[in-house]
Each structure stands twice: as structure tokens, then as C-alpha cells.
Image 1 (cartoon, one colour):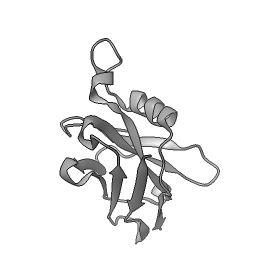
Image 2: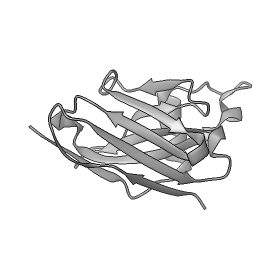
Image 3: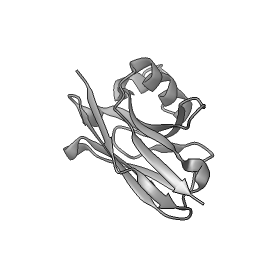
Length: 137
């Protein structure tokens, strides 16, 4: 069983920063692509960032590029999302997500991209309770 636990959300003023943390109980965590989604009320869940198993590759949606940074600590089974220059439009429930192992993204399979990660994470369907981020104007 895969357990995903997100934390670090809160209320912040526009222009402020937050750091989200996600811990995942999965064997061979360091072999999996990981990422973050968010979902605002009345909107679909949106993939916003992902990171390769080694941490060498990162991908972002246009909406968060240059403001958010995803990173990971494989020794702690943890992935982070540093969010800077927050906007009211960033207000949402944020979810950590699990992609596929590294072997999936090589040897003829699609390489890791944000779109590929979103597809894989939705298919894997491993979700935590999420952490709420609210940005006031």
C-alpha cells in the first residue's frame, strides 16, 4: 500500500512564499518520478510540476514556471515544492503524486515530460489528503 502525506500549506499574502512537503511510503522511492498537482474549487486537478527519480530533470506548467521549484530527498522519501511570488490564482488544494519507475521512461517508452507524468500519476491514482494553500490579495 502506498501512503502519501502532504503538509506545509497555509494562508499567505500575495507575493509570499510557502514550502510544501510530501512523504511517500513506497519501496524504491528513489526510482519513481514524483510531482505535484493542484485543484481549485470547481476546476479539474492540474499537474504543475514533476521531477525525475534522480532529481536531475524537472518540468513545470506555464502557470508556475520560474516561481515554483520542485526538489526531492530520496534518503527521506520526500519531495518538496517551494512556491515563491504566490498569486491569488495559486489558491488550491495541493496534492503530491507518484509517477512510474525510471525503467518505464526509457527503452521505447515515452520519455518523462510533465504531460506524461500527469497521465501516469492519474492512472496510478495514489493520492494523499492534500494540503490547502490560500493566497490573499
